[in-house]
Length: 216
Image (cartoon, rainbow, N blue to C red; front, side, top):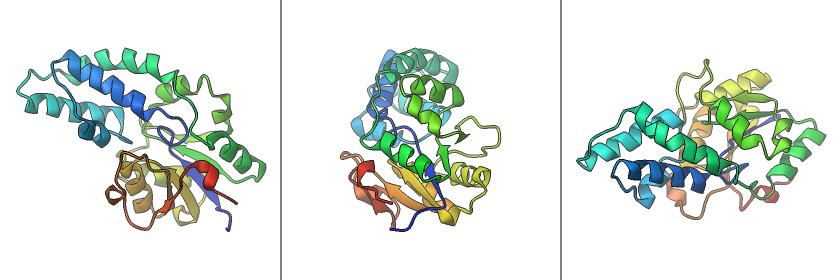
């Protein structure tokens, strides 16, 4: 297997096992306003920016004929829950070793995440190995025009590394993220959760059982 010119990594659900915790936080926040989110609804939030998720949850609350909170009110409930949960997130299988291998081989790396810079710093606290990725595009990056599934986050990450997107390998777990990477023109590798059907992902991706399955 040839080596990539650069690797672009998602964070949540790809390097850290945060997605069930994010879902729990949104579920509890919606419950505070009287709404119960289904498993399918929670799956739709994966890979998306916080504000985009908040707008979607507000829409679901309104669709349940309940008073719709402001984005600020919803996040004021959700954020303390999420922050407490995120410190419990373990690494995904093979994540640390893959980053260390890229660093040893001098393969440029960038983080392409929907999470804000503050959220990434918080989640990274128990995982200093994430510091191997120094080039980062966060969900609140001033240069980011649109979140996943739009390709902007991967285009910006490739630009900051000085590498054409078509020469980059992108690593994702969510349909929104995989779609964004595919639209950017990257070679997309997906570690798909068991609870998401493969039909939800774009065609042409490379499926991985875990990051340990990758060899270069």
